[in-house]
Image (cartoon, rainbow, N blue to C red; front, top):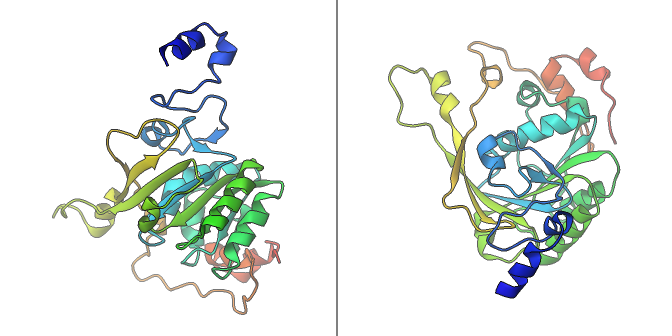
Length: 272
């Protein structure tokens, strides 16, 4: 081993950059997209979410903060004109929040699919041009599904996220980057803060247990505040959704909720 390390030290710089040692954080030559969180980027190989490989976010249930965690990257991708697909999320996308995060709604596609069809939809999406990211919620992904997703991700230029249950931590996976995301509630309520101010201290604890390099010394807590604009306003009337939505992929509803009217939604082309 010592001889191999000595030999590596004598190689030209362009070749040394291609050599990775297990006790070092990898990332040389990797294509990444910044997570938008400096502390998290410092722990990710290549200083960002990896393009062309599968990333697993293990969450107890959908909606604990995984969208707020990836929102900066999604915003950057949609700003470049690339599409981001949400495949089988366990909740209805809230367009007001997405718009408040700066995400271009006309570059966001919501795919409603059953548990058996969702992996196929994500795999096909990764094979298309112009895709910036694919996010798939699949609590019970089979081993063969994981392999196909990783292969499809390797052949693409997109980010690929798979949301699974924390119980999958003990299971093997071809995904090079895996982490458990646990919601972190605000600290004990301060009587000087109202409920809205208190909600600005919510966050996610990120435990990276698999990456190209040694495991981090300890989990990272990232504060993910709820923007004031996405919280319901006192006395505000609810916005009624567009009726008759029954397509697997449909961006029209997102525009309706965000703009609050059919006229604005008519300007957004429906994707079938």
